[in-house]
Image 1: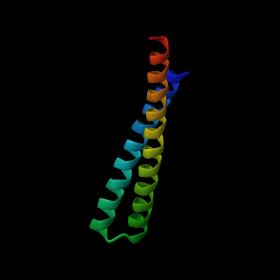
Image 2 (image 1 turned 120 degrees about the vertical axis):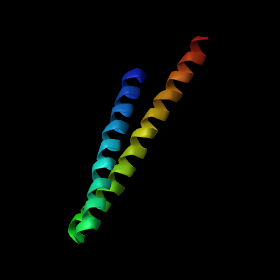
Image 3 (image 1 turned 60 degrees about the vertical axis):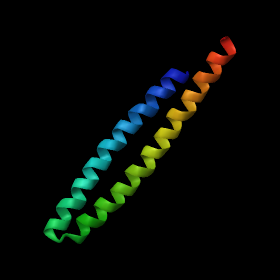
Image 4 (image 1 turned 90 degrees about the vertical axis):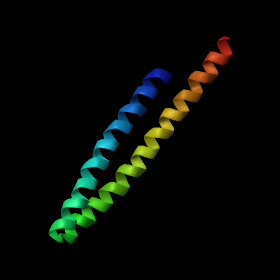
Length: 75
């Protein structure tokens, strides 16, 4: 179970990193066009991607700790 949880967490981190890239590009292009709606959407997307990335990182950390405990138990 820990290995699949680890994979899910890592996949989430990758997904939200891409979402952060997209949102950051939206912010940059909105600033060039003086597009306040695009800027707002980009900033909200950036914050959302950051929060989701942090949640996925916590999943990875928990899975890592579970794997470590399992190894300690078996050793």
